[in-house]
Structure formats: structure tokens, C-alpha cells
Image (cartoon, rainbow, N blue to C red):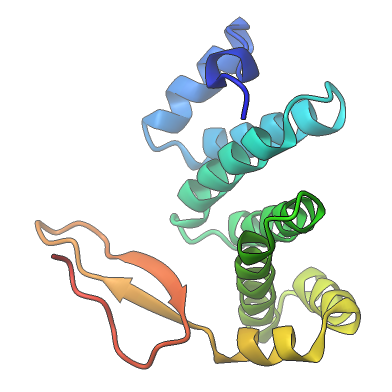
Length: 164
């Protein structure tokens, strides 16, 4: 990976987005996702670092519960999956791939048509064992205490994780 300071330039607009995102502004977190993807797609910056940063920002934005940001996370995960497979990081690719399918499925079940279309396309192009594994994933929560919202994650385990 390249230097994160090099990746995120100190342009005033980028700095403003980053500051607002760090303060919990879900719109800024979504803008940060888009900025990271722009840097990958247009500026040809490091995709490995770019997808990691986009995933982080997308997870933060999705945690607010907005369906558009949850959909944004699913799209980032499927793109990160393709990149990981392409560089030989098969475990990371499979993990992102399965989580994206599960998230698209959850959103489609909630009535999101874009998610339903994306789910159909991804399932059609995915190995059957990947689709079967993704079908076993369930959203889990870890209580945070102190009145904070629980941390959520996907797992194929029947039990839940407790904060240690």
C-alpha cells in the first residue's frame, strides 16, 4: 500500500469532507466514499488503499441506517472484492463478495429495486458455493455499553459475539 497521506491530498475540499466525516456526518462519510472511488477511477491512485478507505467510510455512513448508504457499502464491497481477487487476495475477495451478496439481499428484501437488480446480476455471475455461503450470513450485533449503538457485522455463526 502507498502512504495514506499521499492518497488523501490536503486539498481544502478533501480536508473539509474528512473533518465532517470524522465528526459523524453521514453525508460527508458518503462524500468521502465517492472521493476515494474517484481517486481510484480517475486519478489512478492505489486501489488497495483506496478500497480500504472507501470501505471504512462506507461502513461509517451505512451505520447511520440510511438505505442509500447501505447500498453504497454493498457496491463498495463488490468492487473491493473484484480488486482483491485480481491481486490474489482470495480470502479478502471472498469475504467482501459474500458480505456484498448478503447486504444486497437484505436491501432487496426491504424493497430496494436497485439492490434487487444488483443481487440478480451478482448471483448469476457468482459460483454457487459463494451464493450458498452468503445465504448463511446473518447480521450480528455486539453491545457497546454506555448507551452507544451496537456494532454490527455479518457472520455465519449461530452464536453472537460479546464484547471482551
